[in-house]
Length: 242
Image (cartoon, rainbow, N blue to C red; front, top):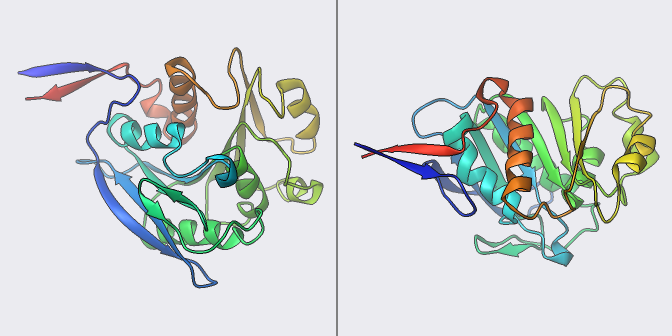
């Protein structure tokens, strides 16, 4: 016997979930979670970087939570989420104070190093809003396959940060909502023009916060297409064995 589950909203599919702690080079303890496929070895790994903590962003922000709830089962993708310094969420509070995107360099490095030390494959940074700034500023020389930017505002990332990606062997893709509050598709084309290999994906009808199941499904499908194309497109139902 089996039951078909429609994949919507807060559905949490099977995964091996482990609470983790990341130790930064400057001595802070960051709380997080690793979600792994239950039966198969992961094909790819997402190291996620959440939106601005001073405006409600944390590791449980909905797109990142739904990635951890779905992608281990649907796409054999491991998902690492954590709270950057000074950030609290239902998973707990990380040490330290918000570093304005500067001292968070240590947070990014600690998360990537954790994934590398675990022997996890095909590591990608996935940043959302403020998290895209961290990915752009500090991901260009990390042991990663690439970075995926969700709603990049380009507030903290400087011209030098963007230039670090020119000719960089790491892949770079950005999902730009049509109705973004900070950087719309036409503006993104101009701002990112210096990086020839970036893939810019304009998403019609979407907003900065990717609200709604259609927006969530589009984001998770695009991530899957990039990191494990064999699993794309994602199914809309899950068959649960009794």
